[in-house]
Length: 385
Ligand code: PMP
Ligand code: GLN
View 1 (cartoon, rainbow, N blue to C red):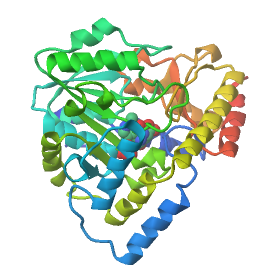
View 2 (view 1 turned 180 degrees about the vertical axis):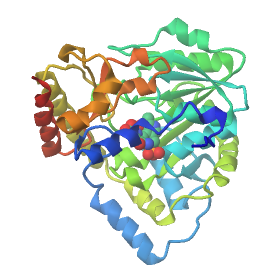
View 3 (view 1 turned 90 degrees about the vertical axis):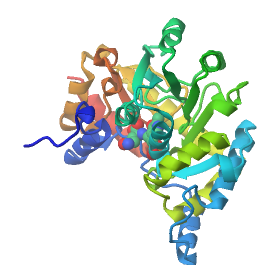
View 4 (view 1 turned 90 degrees about the horizontal axis):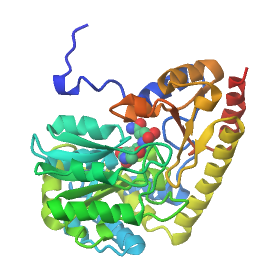
C-alpha cells in the first residue's frame, strides 16, 4: 500500500491509546489502559449543556470562547492559584488541551527552535513538535523516583531554546513537580529568556503534596502559557474543552493559530463548562477524595498480585514494575494482556524516545468504578500460573 504520510510524521504510527483500546474491545477486556472515566460527569454540567442546546446556543461563537466560559476560567485561576487573568484578553478556549498545546507550539515556535520536554512525555507533544518543525531537547525522568538530573536540564537550555513544555501532575508517572524543581525550571526560563508551556490537565488530581502552577513563581506569569481542560476534572473527556491563560501579547499569537485550526469549539458545551468551573470548592474536594480511594484500592490490589507499585502522587494513573512477575517487555506484555487475561493497560515505553527506559513499566488507569477495578484485579490474578 502506498505511504502517503509526510516524512516528518512517519515516526508516529497509531497512538498507543487507540491501539490498546481497540485491543480491549476486541477481547472484551477490562480497560485499565486509556485514561477515560467509566462513569459520567456531574449532572449539573450535563443539564447546563442540555439547557444551552435547548436555548438555541448552537451556532459559532467567538473563536476566543463564549464569554461566560472565559470569565469562569479566569475566576477558577484566581480562586485556586491567586492568578488573575483578564477574561477578554488572556483566556482562550480550544477543542481540548490537545488543541491548546498544538496551537501554542504552532504560534510560538519557528522551525529549528528548541523546546525542552521531559520524558516520558504525553504522546502528542513530540508529534506536534514535528508538525511545527521545532526540535525537542529531552530530559529524562528515571524510575523509580522520576527525579530529573539538574545538570541534564541545565544542559538542555541553550541559545535556540524557545520554550520548556512541562506537564505537572505528570502523565504517565503520577509525579507532581515539587516547588524546588519548579523554582529551578523557572530560574532557567528567566535566565535564558525562555517561555514556559504548562500542561496542567490533572491539576485537581493531587493526593500527596500540592499542585503548584509554574506561573505563580516570580517572573513567570508574563512568560507562561497555562494549559488545562475540562476532561479530567469533570469526568467529561469526550467533550474536548480546553483552555490557555497567558499574557495579552502571547494570547494574541495563540488566538491567531487557533482561529485557523478549529475557529471555535462546540458552543453549548462551552456554556456548560462555564457552569462546571464555577462548581463549589466541595466538588473539587470530593473529586480528589474519591480518586485517592480509587488510587489506594488499585495500588494495593496490584501490590498483592506481586507487582512493584510506584504509587502516584497525582493523576489517575499508576505505574508498576512488571519484573517481579517475570516480565521484562511492556509492549509485549500489554499487547498480549487483553487476549491472555482480559485486561488492557498502557506500555510506557511508548512515551520514551529510548524505549529501554520504560520497558519494565506498565501504566494502569484508576478512573474506573470500583467493580471494574475489582474485576480487572480478579482477572490479573490469572497471570499467576
Ligand atoms: N495532556 C495530558 C498530560 C493528558 O494526559 C491528556 C489526555 N487526557 C491531554 C493533555 C489531552 O487533554 P484533552 O483531552 O483535554 O485534549
Ligand atoms: N490522556 C489519555 C491517557 O493518557 C488518553 C487521551 C487520548 O487517547 N488521546 O490515557
